[in-house]
Figure 1 (cartoon, rainbow, N blue to C red):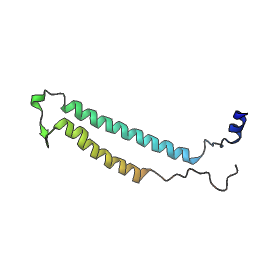
Figure 2: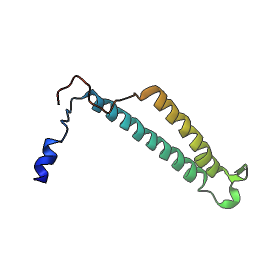
Figure 3: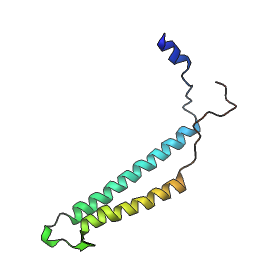
Figure 4: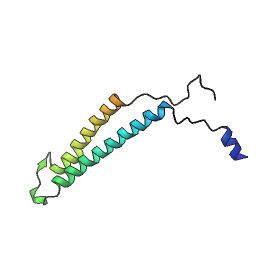
Length: 102
């Protein structure tokens, strides 16, 4: 009996709903931002941080590899996320439209 109740109240999902296209695009943008963040962090952390400690340069008391990978990388990602959200993301309603039959 429980299964039939859940089937009756299950909302109809239309795979051609334009909201799916929007959310898939935004998810792809998020994935690209994650890859950029990891590449930035990895490149500076292991690129500059692979030297012996005696050869490190310091910025504001932090090793340069840490400053560029974590501090500057964080600021760059904040700017990129703001640009992505303001420029590419759209407001998507979660409710079905009023005129649709249920």
